[in-house]
Structure formats: structure tokens, C-alpha cells
Length: 322
Image (tube, rainbow, N blue to C red; front, side):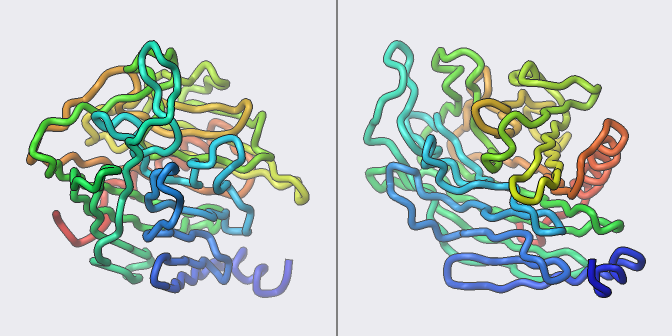
């Protein structure tokens, strides 16, 4: 630890900064790049191009996301992804269909960036907001979305919180049923929503719930938050990821999709086991907080991190309303 780091440890003065390009925004915390958000994706159509966060890093610089893993090329760090949006796939890859398993269909949609609405730092928080348009593979406009995220350092300097909000407007002219592979008949595979894919070294890591429960048995259970503790190759450091569902979300507390084997992943899945009808000309709001922390966490620390994230969710993420 150098002198500057010692100073930050004893008397943390968090320095947020950001850099904007034509397709992404990077946020640094005390000189460390902790978040990169690609808002103009250029992935192949079969991967359902959509905005994503990668890399995400802890305050000390440990990577906690993976991009285009060879087993699922459409997994992109942390991303808002919906595999069963009516007949369309805004997740990427093949689609699961009852009685037919996974199959490649001409239904991979995309989320196109339209314009930036807000980008900057105020009150110790970085905020980014933009408009998107969801288009089917045939080019039909189905959703107009306003998406906002905020990045807030913790007081002690060992973690930071990402607050994510999406406001989706159904402009397709018809009701849309949002579901998952489980609503199509695949047991305990209700993924879809804000989905995090961890680095390879997190395989075999610990999944921990609010009441001390642990393990993959938590997949499909309901809880206000869920955490994952994993260890890094090369440095042997440990990091903690904790995701919180906003109590105002329609499906709160959500069912969770999570795995430790054969890879690390986690996400609140609001459409896990039952389809939700997204009525025409209505707006669907969903908000989440994700804490990214250095070090391992016991139940007491996880409770504190969850309290911090919940507190951040009480505030307004952005100033733009849809």
C-alpha cells in the first residue's frame, strides 16, 4: 500500500471521475476504473445486442464480471436481458420452447441507444441516463425505454453501490407476455431481468441469502436480496457481490436465478415462474441496487451492505421522467 492509499484508508476522500465516448461511459473511483457501461452495443444479432456493464471492479480493482464467455456468448457482464418477451428474445442465443428444448429462431431483438439524457457527478454520485428503443429482429419497435444508473462510493471505501432503474413503455400496440424458460416448461430455469455473470474463478463460490441460507438451493426462492462471495485467480483476493430488489417493484420479493456451478451468476428474476402481462401503452418500472465490495463477508457484513443498498434505493436515481 502506497502513501496515497494509506491516506485514503485513514481519511477517505472519494474522487469520482468519468469519461464519455461515442459508445460507452467509464467511471473511476480514486483513480481505479470501477465501471464501464457500453450503451451502444455492436454484438452480433444472435447475441441480442443491448447495453451492458463490463468490466465492473471493486474499489481495489478486482474484476467481478466476464464478457462473452465461450459457453454463453450472449452473457455480457451485468445486463438487463429478457429471454421471453412475447415471441421475441432480448437475452441472446437460442430460445427455449415447450416440447422442443432450445432452438435457434429468427427472434433475437436488440436495444438501440437513442440519446443521452443525463451524465455527470452531483452530491458525490455519478448519474447516467439515456433513452433506448427495443426492436424485434424484423425491425418492429416494441418498447421505448428510459434507463438510469447511479454510482455511489461507500463511506468506508471498501465498496460502492450501483443503483439501476429501467422504465419501459410498451409501444407495440398489443399486450406482451413476459416469461422465462420455466414458464415454457423448463424446471428451475426462470432467468431474465438484471443478470450478473461472474468471472471464471468465482465458480464454486458461495451463494448466501438474508437468513444465512447458502448454496444453489436458493435458486427459485424469494428474498429481498442475495449475495455471492468469490475468489480471484492470480491475486487470491476475495470479493462480495450483493443485489437488492426495490420493495416497490411489482414482483417484490423476487424469485432469484443463481448458480455457483458450472459458473457464477445471479439476478432477481421477476418473471421466473409466472408470466407477467405487459399491457399496451403502459409503463413498467424496475429498480435494483448492487453492492460491489472488496473482501469476504459474513452474515453481519452482508446485512450492513444490504442496508446500504436499500438506503440508496430510497433516493431518486435520475432527474428525468419518462
